[in-house]
Image (cartoon, rainbow, N blue to C red; front, top):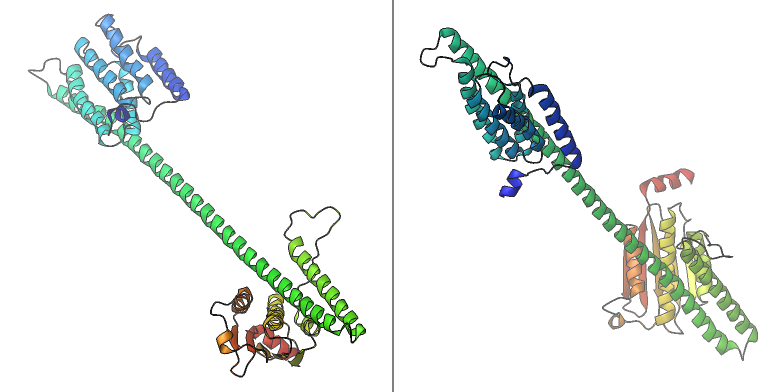
Length: 413
């Protein structure tokens, strides 16, 4: 331990200096004028007066430098022991200094006050009580023993109190430090959770936008190509294709506004975010009908009552599968969407007879297939995407229905 840290361990604030100075001044007014508890038998003495002032004045340093205060009290005590045989009232500073050293000096160096106190507790009573050291009486020895115990008690007791207060203060500081560390840990974990939530939200939004844009553009491209081919032969068919393109574009724009609108903290002036409900199971037939006349739909059973997230997942699986069909299957291919609503699960099959072969399946699937896998997995389901041996592509998703929902459905049927 450094000498500076040992001599000036806590450092005193201005408030502490004022309190300690007031304590020293108060004790000086009470104890210095009478010089001793037995009167003025020895007469006034300049050195005795200075010793009394030194003992009481050392209390000014009791918090800023307890060891220097101990040194001042020790020197003053030796001066008093030499100059007078009477115990002085200024000895009241000894317990205060013993407490201060125990309270503010760290570690074992604080025990030095016990050594000084033990020596003073022995020498002081001998000086005060034994007038004839060579022939002490029994009464003098009894008084001497009592004085030793009292003097040692006046040193040990405040020392024990001071150490106890110091240990309690250190324990409190440790608890505060531990609480601050826990708080910092909680803030760090909360920040990490926020970042994870933001990352999941960005991923979900990107997946939604991909499904909407990719499917809508695929339908619009197919309808535009078909309308261009039929424009010369059947103008009414071209008009129908243009209507489909316009309707698909409006629906895609509406869904994008719904997604982006809720992300804005404040809507733009004159606009209002569209909080329309997300697509549901009953919207799948309309999705298939708008996609292409080369897609057929077969539904077995009645749509069960499932959470909105489950309905959106089923809708997006069909939408992405049809998007891939339009993009990769070829202009002459056809597709069949089969949805089976069971008691415990929803099965979705999208089969086409396009040009895809096992060798044509990419090793690294794109965002669409990866998004389908993420959606189905989040619902606890299973997804199969593969090229069919006979040609074409297959997308099969199985979404489990919660047990309580199955029971409700059975009760209602």
